[in-house]
Length: 125
Image 1 (cartoon, rainbow, N blue to C red):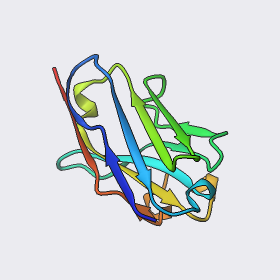
Image 2 (cartoon, rainbow, N blue to C red):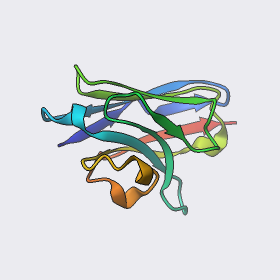
Image 3 (tube, one colour):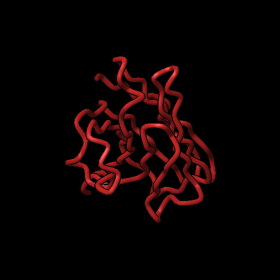
Image 4 (cartoon, helix red, strand yellow):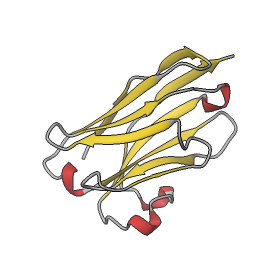
């Protein structure tokens, strides 16, 4: 599975962005997808996860109520809608795919088998 993120950019605080994660391969619909981010000088952190069928989602407390994860398995796409952006959301955002579908481990970065290259999100104050 190859993953390519897009949709990052520069936005003012309070603005919105939608990130996309395009996946190759026919089995994308069988895998869980998560979004992580990494700010300069900080560790990579969990942002959101969505189960293989899209029926379950999970969010870090810092983004809950502002970010929404979704997916379109017919198009091999996953999305992260980000609203009410804050300067502290500035980071490189990565999508990742988990083959084992161990939902209870969804927040662990080492659970994920494939990663995209990342897309930069910069929120100005």
